[in-house]
Amino acid sequence: MARLIFLGPPGAGKGTQADTLAHLCNIPHISTGDILRGAVSQQTDLGIKAQSYMDQGELVPDQLILDLVRDRLGQPDIEKGWILDGFPRNVNQAVFLDELLQEIEQTCDCVVNLEVPDDVLVARLLSRGRKDDSEEVIRNRLQVYREQTAPLIDFYSDRQQLISVDGNRSVEHVNVDLQQIIQD
Ligand code: AMP
Image 1 (cartoon, rainbow, N blue to C red):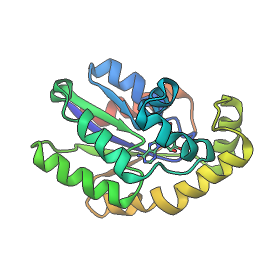
Image 2: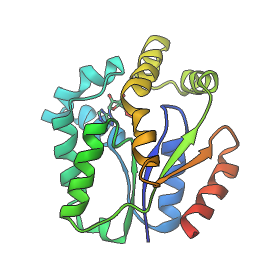
Image 3: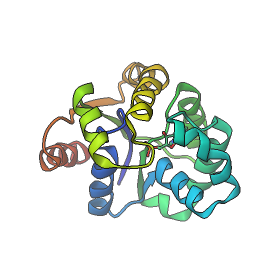
């Protein structure tokens, strides 16, 4: 059973690693970014509200995300374990998650922080070619990460939940480390 949060800047490889690990453990990979992109492509209410924030590299307002996460963590498949990727993204979301996990009688095993230097992140994101990966939007996403998401590193390390992993290596190497972490 693994219940993990993946933290790290955009381009750190959270999505790729979370996907591999989730398949391996047969647990859901819950990416708020993927859920939002799905909502945008289907032009649901949520997607219409979220789109302009995503296009600019800003965070979508908490209320939209919190409803989405509450709903997703209410699904039966999470009993097997889960990997949260891209959530929480700020302290308010982390506090909400604490309360929600208590409410549904779950705990998070650990928070994995994927560390990658800025210049590597920009190069990776530019080569990815996603709509929100133009250079200007990338710089904004990194700035938003530093201001709003990076404080979660202290938030979780103060609670002895944080494990940092060097994400500036091959996908395979990083994956081996992550498999080790969930076995410990
Ligand atoms: P990601 O694929 O995780 O990089 O997310 C893509 C975009 O979706 C972000 O730049 C935000 O606009 C939005 N997003 C994803 N997760 C969150 C979240 N937890 N809180 C607010 N916005 C989010």
